[in-house]
Amino acid sequence: MDIYMMKGALFVHMVEFAQRELGETTVEREMLRLNLESGAAYTSVGMYPFSEFERLHHAFAEAMQITADDFSRRFGCRTLPLLVAGHAIPPDMHPFDFLEKVHGVIHQDVRKLYKDSNPPSVQVVERQGEQRLVLRYESQRPMAAFCGGMLEATMDTFGCGDIYRIERIDAEPRTERFAEFVVDLVT
Ligand code: HEM
Image (cartoon, rainbow, N blue to C red):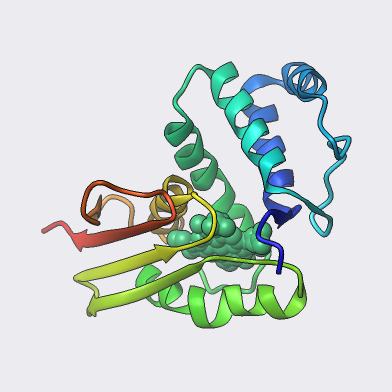
């Protein structure tokens, strides 16, 4: 498996997110300016170099005048509901039960469906009922901030954003290829 190649799904979502935030003309201009090897006509089933993902990510964050981490987090917040909408997931499910399914079911299905895909490990490593959960992210790609945004949006999508607090708890110095997040019920 070539970790330097990445499935087009997240490219398509990132370009759509940037178009919403910056407008189509600016996005088009940024993509032309980068003179991308692939020609930038992304499809969700295509495979593209991760270096291209990083260049686009950097250019869009700069054009939005926000940090790369902030861009990743907001991009994750925007993407999660779109991914959930494509699956038959009951809306009254508790978000912790949904998070328990990401590793063994959802990302597993992605791996089976697209043999060349490479979703990260996103695993629940600790859970106390509906009170507290610890989620661990491990990947070959440095996308911990994106994972944090996906987690935030999970709690919102299942209607629980107001009653839970999320904190990143892995020890410093941190790498973006690994993260642990705790989600606590605020009483
Ligand atoms: C219905 C729900 C979900 C679907 C369909 C889904 C699907 C996917 C797909 C198709 C990819 C791209 C794989 C690749 O490029 O090889 C991906 C990547 C990713 N997913 Fe999920 N996912 C879901 C839920 C979640 C949740 C709840 C989280 C975290 C809270 C998460 C975290 C991530 C991260 C961080 C990445 C990309 C970062 C990396 O490669 O390290 N996903 N997912």
